[in-house]
Image (cartoon, rainbow, N blue to C red):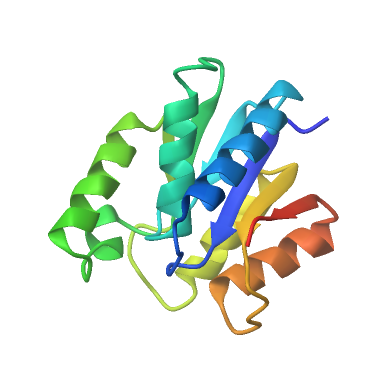
Length: 155
């Protein structure tokens, strides 16, 4: 039985009605089958879409929890983001049930540590992965495959 789900995906996501529907449907099925804990890494794009979807689904399924596993301080993670992206991030950060930082400061490799931690905490992975090998998403999917957990690729 799946109790925990992690998310990984690209920053550049074409958000369509079809994708939003598929994400909602996938998460709803996972919740109905026992998923309660959802782990996300706080990045722009797929992560934020998944985080917001979990927060929206919490209205219908109050037992579910959003856990953020962040690679470094919020200030450092969002340093190059637009004001709108920072505002969305802050809203999600405030609404999350738990926030864990894998490092106090940004360093080369902190994203990988975050990715390993996301998979470590999960029974399955919901991703948006276009098979690019040289990406954090590809790295995370490979870690999930090695762990042997179920992967739902919604691309």
